[in-house]
Length: 380
Ligand SMILES: *Cc1c(COP(=O)(O)O)cnc(C)c1O
Image 1 (cartoon, rainbow, N blue to C red):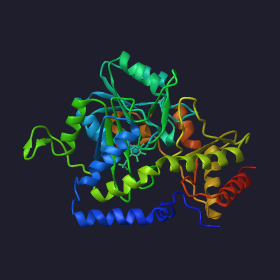
Image 2 (cartoon, rainbow, N blue to C red; image 1 turned 90 degrees about the vertical axis):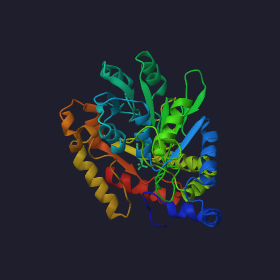
Image 3 (tube, rainbow, N blue to C red; image 1 turned 90 degrees about the horizontal axis):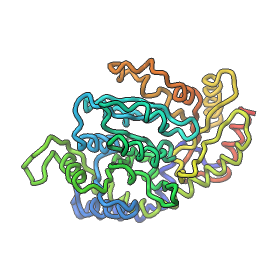
Image 4 (cartoon, rainbow, N blue to C red; image 1 turned 135 degrees about the vertical axis):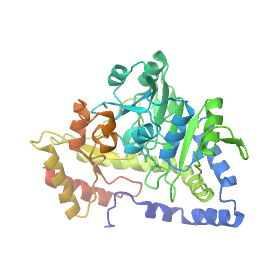
């Protein structure tokens, strides 16, 4: 059996090695390392894949969120509502821009923003909402957009974990996640569903004015070279990364299908299990399984039980991860906001119980059988 990894980008690379190597060499020959044709081509192709008017490449997914928030013209102290149960990048940029993060609960089944909690958290200072499509499952965007429209709030979708995910509206129409709110952001970090061979990110919008502003912000606030109208930053996607991403984009649907096959295998193996809750799939979301995350339930001390499972799997050469061991509202960096004591029973409950199994495009049935056998050997 091949060794089991949490993420296997190497085997995936080897399947497209010749194309990737040729594309990288071509960029090197062209010497157009920054904002070359490869970047423009990739942005155009990604934009048509997602069916979105403007795609702005940038240096990483954290910058994408930062540039999106800078473009909205928010003032220090303005409130931005976001889940506590997410990767730190989502919430960190809010504080970095001297805005106030307002943490809300997620749904215990989908791990995504709870619209009822969102509506309760809105105040006169609220300016924006940042839902996260966590683990590859869409947040309930139809309800979130309805609430946002009612209160005239901006919505920035953090789509770093769900690129390619279809959102299905109640009338049956579909849109890709990241193209529903005013702005969407994503990351091309190597382990993401569309991963580069280094850092990368992108921003999406239908709004011409926001698009122009975000392009300027990502490029030192200039629209004309050496004329800087607003304070921006320097956030670029390398041509080499764009050339690689453009090749991988053609395989994205196939990669998603492979992840879903793996999820189906896990789902079947853990069906009806008393101590393991499988990740649910809401009717509105086509889950793209960035992670396959189980919830430990029905045991006396879930934290210790989960640590035991994690160690048992490690002893058997199976990696597993806790995404994320500390929720946002309990992070030391947010002490200034006095949020550590917030009453967030769902977030705390999940934080103690989640465990993610190996999930990538290259897992075969032999590996999956071994993983599921070992998990159930421990859990009974
Ligand atoms: C990865 C990730 C980011 C940040 O992306 P980087 O490219 O690492 O900066 C933001 N939000 C979420 C939910 C992520 O998973």
